[in-house]
Amino acid sequence: MRADPAEYKLVSPGSLQTILSLMASEPAQWLPIAGGTDVMVLYSAGKLPNRKLINIWNIPELRQIEAFPDRIRIGAACTYTALRQHEIVLQEFPLLATAASWTGGIANQNRGTLGGNIANASPAADSLPALLVYDAEVTLISARGERRVAYRNFHTGYKKTALAADELIQEISLPRRFSGYFSYARKVGARHAQAISKVCLVSLGQIANGIIRDVHLAMGSVAPIPLRLNETERMLTGSKIKPSLIDAAGKSTVKEIRPIDDIRSTARYRSAVAGNLVAEFLEKLAAEGANS
Amino acid sequence: MNSSPEESAKCEVSFIVNGEARKAFVHPMERLLDVLRNELGLTGAKEGCGEGECGSCSVLLDGLLVNSCLVPVAQATGASIITIEGISAHALMKPLQEAFLECGGAQCGICTPGMILAAVQLLEKKPEPALADIREGLAGNLCRCTGYMQIFEAVARATRQRAAK
Image (tube, rainbow over all chains, first blue to last red; front, top):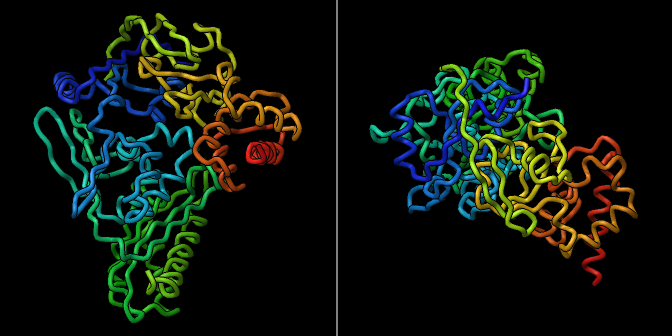
């Protein structure tokens, strides 16, 4: 059943302070809407639980990308298009630019936002594994004040997050210490463009004399949340890349993920592909990683 | 979470549509697509999927390609909107229209307004796109008739014709 617009409110306060006080006055009543690429889909299908929406698209401070010597701060309402065009994102956080290019087509990239992808909390979201490997931190803001949460602790279960009912994601901060890393990203979906992933791997690594100094691995669509592969990373760090290690990393990956059967794929296929992607990353890291 | 549905008040939304100042008295959560079609009589943008997958409702909102089915009209307040009806004077339209005709880039025509607007957006940003750029630029627009190759060729041909001038 299509939604009747007469039954929904949409207010546009135009300032962050007013938005936060409205959200504080009626917690869990107001749903923030930025580019609408998730919210409007639910709305159109008549499946949006909230009847009151609050416009955060026209708040300039949520749309800025600011560079500091040690980090960049990305406003939560920055679009995928903005990320793909930003010089520092392209140079130092290429995996985020790549993930942004995976997300929908151009029209959705012009409207969809990084904060929206985080708040929507889909385990198949394209940009979230990139935030995990770059050790992102999110700033949550409410009328009560602001707090920072390590992004790896943000997702607490399927579609469950650390965000309180009166809080808004204000910005995402990425430390600028990965420019020397080798990076790898591969999304496996039914079609190259505009598909929701069956499995994706986003990873960073640094090697010296064939030894892995540091490695960050994150996968999408293989668990209830976007997943950082902590165990596999521990196993790999300090090891020399050789066939037996690659084999063991694939096995460790399969042990660490929790894939399911759904409309897009099966748990068995996802496990096989997950192991293969980690193996491919390690082979490339060994072959090309010393030059990066 | 839901109390009983409360009626929202209609409001006046003003914007510039195809270069003309227009107003509509609508609910703020009306989809821009519905306002364009039902209130302003601009039926060039089509509803295909209604969920941002097919691109047949594409318009340019402040110069950016968007799916108008995913834009609540209140967010378009004060914006400049270009629909397929308003783009005929664009410098890219003559070569694009000719190339779509010559290459068989349109059959049933439902996707065509979105394809043209996506092509305009692409060529404005990248005047000499490679085939991979054309495929990416049009990836959000589905066509169930042509099989896409004729459309990609049409955009490539329009690019060559423009470069030749």
